[in-house]
Image (cartoon, rainbow, N blue to C red; front, side, top):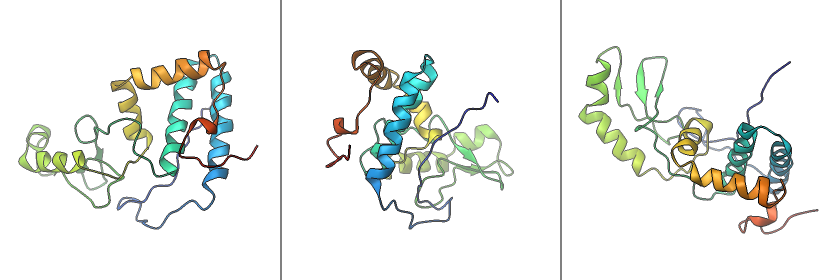
Length: 174
C-alpha cells in the first residue's frame, strides 16, 4: 500500500480545546515507543532512523522533560487557522495571534509589532511540546543533535535503543 504512519502523543492546548489530557501508564506507552524505535532503526532508510529520534523525543515529552531541541515556532514556522489568523503554534496554552491575512498583507503581518510581541511570547514558552510541526524544523536546523543520536543508535549500538538509557525512567519491565 506504500503508506507511512505518523506518531504523536497527546498535548493540552487552546487549539485542541483540551487541558486535562494525561497518560496514566507512562512506562507502558514508553515501552511501545521503544519497540517502534527499534523497528525503525532496523530499516535501511535514513528517514526512518530520524523518525526513531522523533519517537525518542515523544518518550522524553510524556515524562515531562525539557524539549530535546529548541523550539523556533513563530520564527521559522506558523499555522493559519480557518479564520486566517496566523498563530505561532497550536500547542500554546492560550491563542496568540500574529495577525490576520484578511486584514493585512503578508509583509505587514510578518513584520508587525504584534508579530514581534507574539515571537517574544513563544521564545519564553515553557510547554516543551514535541509535535512534528515544531520538532521536524528543529531537527533540520540542529541536524547534528539527531544526527549524532542516529549514528550512536544505528551504528555504534548495533541498531538498538533501550529505555534504560533514559535516566528519567526509574523502572523498566523486561
